[in-house]
Length: 235
Image 1 (tube, rainbow, N blue to C red):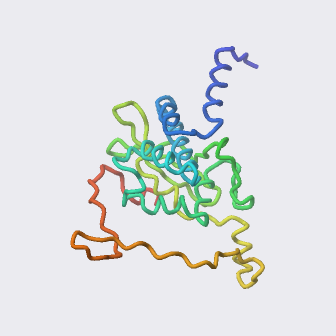
Image 2 (cartoon, one colour):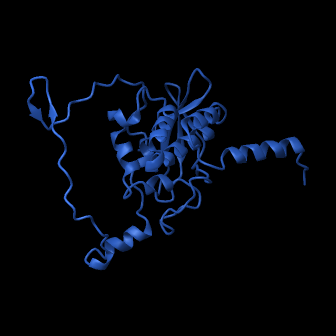
Image 3 (cartoon, one colour):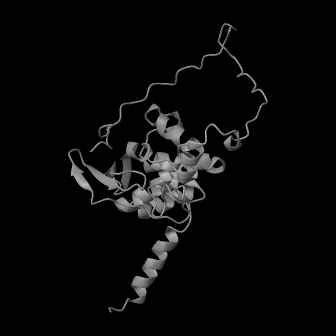
């Protein structure tokens, strides 16, 4: 058995410590990215950490900043039409289990139980080069029968970024608890309590002439991004 030197052991301990807890702030996340983002695995791990931070409503603002950085987006993801479905899936408690399905040990049978502060991403193979400087990275989801492909790219700063994440929020097998609830949809004992209080109507906006209107104004158009195909998960 080969002896492990103190230097190697210390390096392993430092690396483990870096992955031991979700970043509390965007500043902390960005500082870690300068080191961990030098590898594909580190960039992918930090992408998912940003997802889990965003999924927590209390830290959503910081999580949005983290994901904007990890995905090299030129604007906040919450304001991007490119990522509208992505943002919706992260916020939706009925769907965001799909992000947990990529963590080792999380399965439909245990309702994709995992610790956001201590997890490892499962890979289904080695990255594959693609024209345009992109790499296709196959991820393994315990709720899917085939690998889910994400696209990463190395930029001039020497760091890797997740450029196409569409495969990470494609439907996977439902958690066991959801399956049980669905099979008892006719049983009122399985209904969740709902707030019967009526919700206040949205405040009407006023234009420059003083007229009221309810329709939201369209955001400014987004610049076209240099991105891989939208169907990055269909291989």
